[in-house]
Every structure is written in C-alpha cells, then in structure tokens.
Image (cartoon, rainbow, N blue to C red; front, side, top):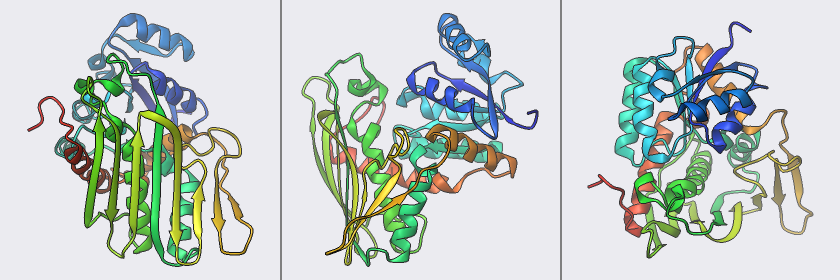
Length: 342
C-alpha cells in the first residue's frame, strides 16, 4: 500500500531480523531498506528479507529518500547518536531500549526529535501489548484493592564472554541497562496507575549489586523503590543467574501475576494475567491478540506518525527520560560507569 510508512532498519543483528519479519505483517508499514556497517552483511540481510535495498553504511540509509522511519537495533552505546543523526535527517525513529547510556544522552536524543519535528519512541515492545494495558487497568480499577508491593525480576544466565555486548563496558554492557530497565519501567507504570497517572517516579531508591571482577559490569543487581501513594517495589536483574522473568503486584485484597510479563504472546497462550484472591481459585484473564510484539510496536509508530504525533502513549518521551534517570541511580549505587561518563 502506498500510504504505508516506509521503514529502514539500522543493524543486521538478531533483534533487527525479528523486527523485519514483523513488518511483513504490519498494518501500517513496510520494510524498504537496511543499513549495515558492511556491504556483505547488508546484502545478506536484504536477500533474506525478499530483496529490499541494502546500504553499506548507516549514513547511506539515512540519506535514502524513500525511507521515512528507521528502527535502530545496534548496541546500546550507539543509540543516542544514531537517533540524533536520524532525526536530523528527517526520519521518524523507533530506537531499541535503552534510548541511551544515560539520561543526559537520552535528553539530547529527545531534543533532536523535537527540533526536527519527527516521531521518536523507545522500543519497550511489551508496553504496546494489550496485556500491559490490562495490567494498568486492573490496578486503576482496584481489582486487588490498594497496591502495596510489586516484585519484578528479569534474570538469565549467559557464559561470560568479553566479546559479547552484555559483558563489554564500552558497549554499555551489564544487567541494569540491558534488562533491569524492564522491572524499572513496569514498576513506574504500576505506581502511576495506582495514583491515576501514566507513570510515577520513585521518592526513595536503594540498590546494590555485584560487578563481574573481569568485565567490570554489573552481573547482578537488586533494588527497592518506594513510590508516591506508598507502593514499594522490589526489583532484580541478572545475566549470570538462573532464569526467572516475573512480575507480581500484591494488593490489600489480591495479587496480580504476569507469567510472561515482558514478552507476552511470543509463545501462544502466554499473554495472560492471573488474579489471585484469598480462598478463591485464580481468575485467568486472556490478553491474546493477533500479531507479535514487534508488529504491534510497528503499528503503534505507524498510527502515531499518520496522525502527526511526535510521541506515543505506550512509551512517551517523559516516560523514557524518567526510566533512564532511575537506571542512572541504580548504576551509580552499584558502581557502574561507562567510558566518557563523569
């Protein structure tokens, strides 16, 4: 369709391939080009995507007049600068989380989008799924009474390899920035819903963690946050621990459990919320929807661009900046600094 948003992808990695596949079923957009650091990688990616245009540099992709929007799926340390360059080239931007290495760089990216009048969203794809909207609705409606305690964990175990982004300080490695951003974002979302807002910022935040002795990135981190209204959140992330990805919200009259909080629907039947109330069997709320997470995310962008918006409710600019500020605080408590940071 001629009125579909024309996408270019910056990166040829795993996430970029998943997003490319999702665009094939998107309602609002289609993939027209890819940009890579090497011609060989770009041409291979283009063949796998049905013969789209391949550019041998990111600059060439940003100069492509047919490309209206870009998806940035490169390592963390490049996100802010590529977002700024894309905005200045007049492209709408969907940038993988985290939007930058820190809040200051994220603010520069937002300022560039504002100055250029283009759309920008940080790609927290779970925020675009109906399961997340339902979670916020249940909290707002008092389905479990007054929310008192949220626990959010995102942990997995990867072999330590300095060549991997996860264990490379220069690339923004570590658990907090890569996956701790999810527990922080869901806690801020639930705290906001509990007080009638889109999100809320913690009034108190205490944290600790463990640095890998060789890589000098956080391999494990934990935090406790207190929010306006009294919600307390216990957050944990790890990249060298046994796998657990879970979210529970305990209220005065019940508990909400999300078995698959951050990748709902990747496996059929996983988009659901369990409502536990005392002396009653769990109530299961099905949140299934057609299309995968990346398709939903692409259509959020497409719909926003079509109506002339610069940001979208699932992850607004202020929400992204607030999330980055908490991550800065968490990293500082653990002692993680990236090259070039003060």
